[in-house]
Image 1 (cartoon, rainbow, N blue to C red):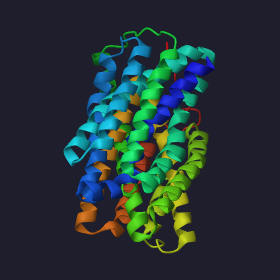
Image 2 (cartoon, rainbow, N blue to C red):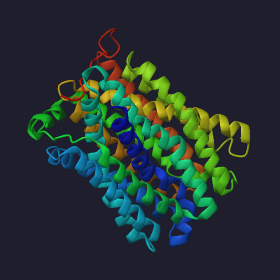
Image 3 (cartoon, rainbow, N blue to C red):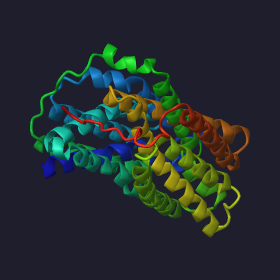
Length: 392
């Protein structure tokens, strides 16, 4: 079943690239559309808030739909939306081009993980799901930076046009998937019961804070590198690629330490991110020190992605899949709030303050992680290791 799982991973690459590519394109897109960088940043918020609000409900509502048909439909939505983005002539058209794929993204993620596990069978389910999620890593390392380089060479519209073609091509390739019937999951009422747990709510709040801290600065990283560090478009693209590459280290470290103590790992990486973000402005004109700052930040940020997902799933072992969808929503609320907060900081104090604000929010997240750690059993040996069954 290597081919169908690889097709899902390839589709995941296109979807995640579509979600985050705009971060690298904000400066030229804002200039072309005649809007401020803060207004352009609201497009990131729109996508994130749409995922957060509609994701769990759409996923539950569409759980009965045959999977291949659902995946093809999601990729066609991305193809049309990227084509509209490539031709957008104002902020409102671009907003529509960002809204509709945001509805399809959480549906694809929830169903693709389940489908990969179903195709591989129980013995290889975890490996299959991790391979699909490799599409996320590939998008961070290659998709987003390459899109930025394409934008610098041929314009930001070309980057979206290429994504439109890729999305359509992936939709056609997904027709090769075997037929997989949908199935009913636990009722929404049964799943929502996990929200009665103060521990689950605390973990979701922590995810929201972590992602707000990340995206207050990361949303505007391309603009920081361009306007404060003086990088040209090509150098911005290569720097974003380096940021993604060091994220591979963070992904490995996060996976290594999360089973020992999810909250302990969150605390350590949140403090590490605060160090990277707080030093950003201080070293912005020293190439080597700036590189070191970005490495520290990039490793911590990538680690927190996987640590957060595992941490929330372990907080609700009775409904780990629903907990994971809630975590995606909480993280996307954080992404949206971070983009808004960063825009307000730029308006009131300028780009140079973004690193400091992101660092302060990272410290708040670290304090919450410490409180949850003290109040939980996470620190006790053996308690943190939970087996999560994926699929049927």
